[in-house]
Image 1 (cartoon, helix red, strand yellow):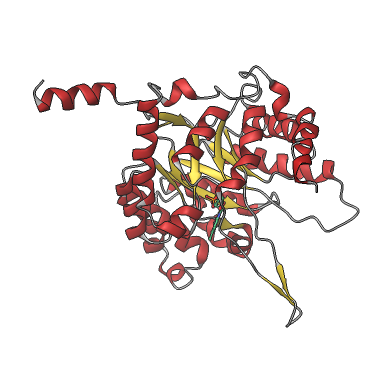
Image 2 (spheres, protein in one colour):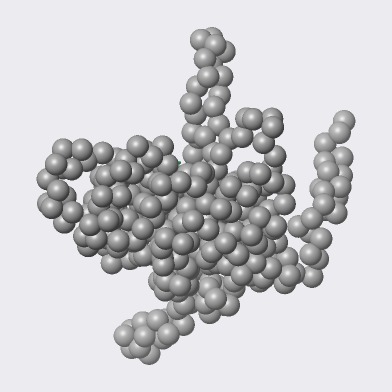
Length: 347
Ligand SMILES: Cc1cc2nc3c(=O)[nH]c(=O)nc-3n(C[C@H](O)[C@H](O)[C@H](O)COP(=O)(O)O)c2cc1C
């Protein structure tokens, strides 16, 4: 067989890596998660060159917005088509280009710099004027919106039910403002994750991003200070989102993105088999550079070829709770078995 024929044959046998997420057609299931990697256009282009199928922007925080709502209102009410244009209409605003405005302008530039979908990100917990920024993110051209909700409740009088209602209301408010698909990035710390997931979807979320990873302060014992600390993840952290996507897949009518602990092609495969539409990566890209995506995609393709999987779609959900022969493997029943397996270590 001539070498070009061989090459053609290999191409026809190549597994189909395409997937869909939030109504977007993506060339593969590897998405760059929200991180400082989206802060520079050069890095954003490198993410695309390395093969990322979409990019989630770093978040604009509620705290960065609230005092800016007045200017935003002005901008939206005048109905200008882009924020950059609005700045030229209102030169006085140019002097006050604070973080939210810079964010929108940067997002617009990121959109122009790459062909892959770009997902804007808002991070906040309370309903209020700042959610207008969802509309501004839509107006500057984002393909979807990721809403990251997470509070650290310290008030002993506020119940889980009260907090959950606030979160659901927030999703409803954002939904009312945009036509964009919305994905909700959640914490794993809900007493009944399936219930709140269902309510979020009923309130208008099209996708769930499981899970956010948190800044967990440490103590400096010599200085007796609380030290801000954000460690990068390892693949071990994959198991928490893996289990929950496997449980929710088929029960909740939403797309799933798995984030936390995706470092290798195996991690991506597990995410898809649990039921995720896409897997998202931050830590490994910060640690190993954007080129990591290219290696990972090669490994992914090779694994699928060797194991004779034709497509990502074919694999999706194949290891979800509804699909496996022992659904209890995801539940409490297996806990005791796992504990007993450590008996051999007791001397
Ligand atoms: C330095 C850093 C900055 C991050 N910034 C954001 C952010 O702005 N918004 C957000 O939703 N998540 C943010 N994340 C969380 C990541 O998007 C991701 O969900 C999390 O790190 C878990 O994925 P990983 O295991 O691949 O790191 C950040 C993570 C890191 C390490």
